[in-house]
Length: 114
Length: 114
DNA sequence: TAATATACCTTGACATTTAAGGTATGTTAT
DNA sequence: ATAACATACCTTAAATGTCAAGGTATATTA
Image 1 (cartoon, rainbow over the protein chains, first blue to last red):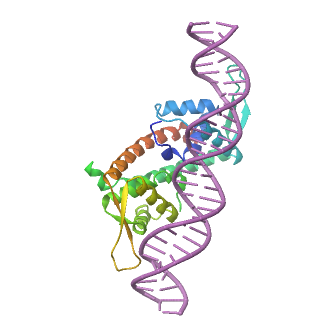
Image 2: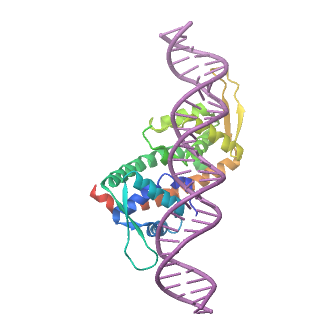
């Protein structure tokens, strides 16, 4: 993984919720999607992924149900709740604000002598 | 603090190093600067700040020396090393990359029904 | 002399991530 | 047949970083 995970840390929930806003999905698929969307530069550690699902289900952001496909192993699907959508919107707003602050704090004049 | 600290988490070192690229400084001053630069929306917890100084000194990014001022309490100044500057540049590059990835992953079409 | 600002530091609890391991099914190549 | 691989889920112990809460000390101001 080429991106420092500490930078992505704190966005795990937002990334998962954003993905689920498009459609119901399951862990393996979401992680593949993240890998593809990031051009192969990032994917969630499985333990991180399943920990996040548990956290999000516990706090009411998502619900889950078992898929009925015959293909491959069984899939556990996740569905975003109304509360989850609100949470996702809030996290997105916070991200936009944080982005500005971080840019202000780390884009210094010192960067010029590069 | 109005910004979720989990979002800023992972940028503590970059923020401190960026500040030190401008000039040698000390904990209290750096934190005030962060607060001002962020429009009062963010400041580091003191424990986080001093933990970061220790971490950065341990891994060779900064060095420290005691100030000789008479005013107020004694100050411990930090100076960024050549390795620290390289690290800062690398972290900055990683931030730019991570920003794009996160924007890709959380700016979905689902956002439109807001 | 009390309050406030400056300035440093430590400790224990907490949340999240991770490496490493496990289970099971279906497909493909040998 | 069977080995290898992709799909798909899950758990545990350890590591890391942050935070609330506590502490010490100096200089200024009310």
